[in-house]
Length: 638
Image 1 (tube, one colour):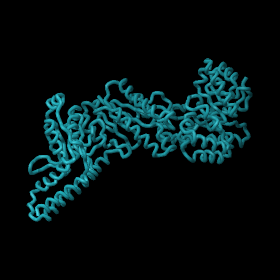
Image 2 (tube, one colour; image 1 turned 45 degrees about the horizontal axis):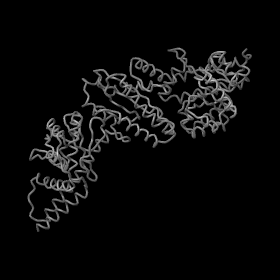
Image 3 (tube, one colour; image 1 turned 120 degrees about the horizontal axis):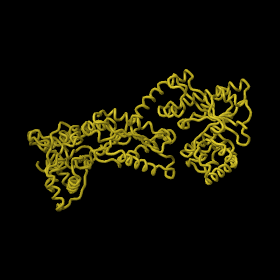
């Protein structure tokens, strides 16, 4: 009978070990002199365990001590190294984890997670379906952690099987079960204990995963805002908050990537950025991802220049990975930084101010970061007022159509014009677009504004045509977000048709950077617009985004030279470049438009280089549509 019982017990143990397989090589373990010094300098290691994670870690109330697989493994480490492990009393898994976050414990043992900077996770034992993870907190010296790891690696497969089996029996003894004399009954109890253990494992794992789920970003695996707050509540006090800065970092063109390349590609960008950021943060720093795609970092702050250097390095690494040689699209970062005051511990306020700073990074800024200061605070208030007044201003017709004439260089006649806008605000007077367009772009109302102004321009053209006045083609600008919208072409064609304006009076400007980022998509859009009758201008040409070899693939009517080329007309190389671009454009049946012409000398040089059309203050400043109509009736410029 005893043999039968022994056989059944062994079967139960083998079943359990089959479920939770593990393998390491048994090693001879000898401490070096350096390691002996490490043990002497740090003899006591404080450990925070979960009371209720049988059989891995649990509290034996009868013996008033922690027991389980983890404790047995750490006992093994003690025997090899001499480290004394002192176990802190905890109520549950959450409190054990909290002891790690607030540096009261050297070690916590739980599921491996990604609370970067505050804990360094190391898988202790892996069973199928469950990970027991050792997490060394910032409190523990690295050389101590390394020695403990080396000792753990000596545990053999047979040791693990023995530990699991003995802990199952120990759990049965802990509840003082009456010894059963019948072999089958006793085997059933052991089997029941193992079954209960598995149920407990599943339940505790569910409970643990639920908490991690609530505190973890599902895409990247790093903490979400809730998880970040849980860490900072116990890790950063009002006494040291001023030694940190809150950083808001976002992929500026993420929505464009998502709309053009798909959600999967955008998600990959986000996870890649998360890993890159994780590689650039130090201990006692936190990385989290918010639901709105922002990355939030709490970084140690010493000097402004040092922080600029760190963030610039991150931007440089992203640029290296996503330059146009290695990627179909660039990834552009925008970063806001806020260094809080002593009394400011409210995480929501810290995140809000770093976000406000980030929102003042402009699309074309060479510097991709902004510190929160009084200027940002004042401008934030003003921007809120602008956004609040936007819809009412449209209803009151406070946005005005302005046009800057385009001049044919050959005879100084008016060739066309560019549609611009002005905002007549009763509170502030006449506002230039440079003040409100960036606000509309940040808030997302730019698409509504663009369509409103396009429709208003079509209304004015319709009125002029019906009244028999002279009409010339006008160019229209749209925010880049429009071109990722699949019905963009159909929408503007429908508006032009509604107001009986032939599309050949309307020139759509697209930027060189848009074409460079997604040549295939933009080629399809340009072709569709051309089929509808619109003409197309390539704006800001010469900024370096696109290759000359790409141009023949697009049916472009105009190449609009970047202003920087006009400013450098005295340079002989610039002249040769403009001449080469002009010849190329003419070979493609395209015309050259020169924007920013401010002097007669510039106009004469451009004319000598065979450029076709000029636009700038030398000829005319932007003017109300009514004045432009009157100008069309006047004689040519002398």
